[in-house]
Length: 506
Image (cartoon, rainbow, N blue to C red; front, side, top):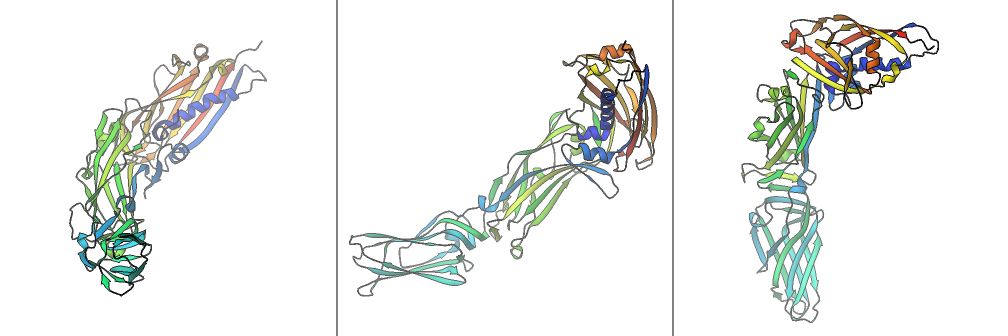
């Protein structure tokens, strides 16, 4: 089973230490037999920063300006492209006469647009020739621009001899602009008989837009809702904890929003829950329940991103209580609404690459207290390595710069998890907390000396063992009544030696 961040911070040092030492027995060469050997195993200093960097398994690690350690668990709620959600439908406008002035708000875009820069699509002009001869038709759309100039399309019609000849003229709209800032769309055509130049009306005439894609749109884009994908953040902090109680003084949830939609957008939490070991599903309360408006670029900031940071902490949400119940998963389900107040007077914009992204982050500064934090971990162990040892004796000295007390017990188990024996009769103190100042910082280290005998009877009991279950009980300073801080310069030193009596091979 892999180590978790919590093990690294509070008990990883103990687990790694004893696991390594027991494995080192296998490295003792017994070729030159002697009834008794003494081996210095290690004299090592480790910092908390070392352990975090080498064993971090689920989040990132950072420090503040005072070198206080922080654990960060982050996830992206969504990254949404505007053109995927706001599209221009196909449009068809009948032309009963040779000219039409239409209010731009009456164009069936679904939005009240004042400008469209086309990326693709077709302009279509359809009509029937019922005049039994060739025609010359010109089409003028005053608001359709090419490089700032209105476009006129000349359309020659060769009569095919039928009584009613259907004509479909189409042209690519790429790089064209529809400028509706004047509030009207003016369309006109001039159709003339080729033989006499007489002006005539076209039958069943209509103008349309099809398969439109845009680089830029401007105007009132409407009141539109987006469902963002359900997602989660795994928290391995309490993965191996058993019946633990830990309280963080300053847990923080941050929602960071980066937005290049040029419209007001409101984000709302449909669900924001924590899956906890102690209480099951718990709802996280926050302002996101009612919706929060986030910043957006103005018409003078087209192409820019506007940022919004929403922060929830112990003073404005119940996150501290939830963290104390040992969460292992944060679940979030968000939705967003453009123009949430449905105000048609707001003129916004959207580009084909406009997007907003929502990032979700849990920050846990290692400023905490715990009156009981129990961790268990299982490591592989081959008890047959003890076959040539009659008895053994470990000597352990610790010099602890961490603000914790720790008891430890080793359970030697067979492959089915049945306990064959324990290293200690009762859980035994291994680390003694350093002395703290008024700010909860260690100012002098705690020390401990421990003799660990391994009798022949215990060696015989545990020789069939295939694994060791290591249980560490951690208490912060002053029996868990004082909140302590873990800094990047905190470290502990351990010195260990082994004295073993070997079996006589004869």
